[in-house]
Image (cartoon, rainbow, N blue to C red; front, side):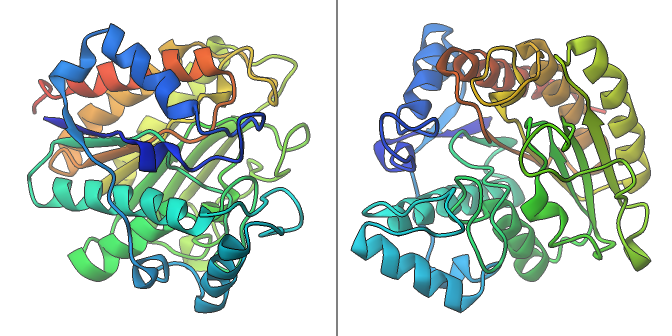
Length: 318
């Protein structure tokens, strides 16, 4: 059964009611999931908090100390200005990390087929700094957990958020065991201004990274699906032992801070296909994070489509 993480402590990661990344994002999705009856077809898990030591699987101790200090202060900037501290941001970030770690462990232990953590996929933070609304990088934390504590070597990270997942990409650009496939809006038009087609990994990791920038104005499903086919071929060659999907809803038409024009069909298709690939190559091990998305209806529609695809994908076996 698919496990979904839901609860007030997870929703609390947000920068205020008037901020694009507000604390109402989780409920926007969950109300839609309940109206669709999907809440009765999943295992609902309460939020879990990670320890300081678990955050340091990826992040430097000095950065975590800064996060703790500014969280207690309740003000200040965690980066160059995009990611403000708020009271309790450290505790909220620990919950995001704790949920993804718990989801990964449930999958590894056979207690869940898949896991979906809606408020997660904070893919901009680097080891020593926050960035782009991301106080931590839970994707990096999962990768390090899988490698260090579960002896999983070949990990695939797939990102369909409108923004390039630079915090994951550049921290693993030289790592041949982490396969990254990222469809995003062209960096010439959108933050963080990275993720170009020519960036395929460095040195021994050359060819283990796939960046697929899509160029506005307005990118549609017709642009997404051919790019997605490239990802499937890429993953077939990678043959991963564990797959992580960042399913950002900000690539849907109508997001207030991006310029893409996908529909939730893209998110559904990507999730369904990854279920098949996970069953074929890695014992069904697929963990999904919600990622970005700042139009509440788009969040509801895209993440509900993702959840429905995860549930339907449970029946897919090879």
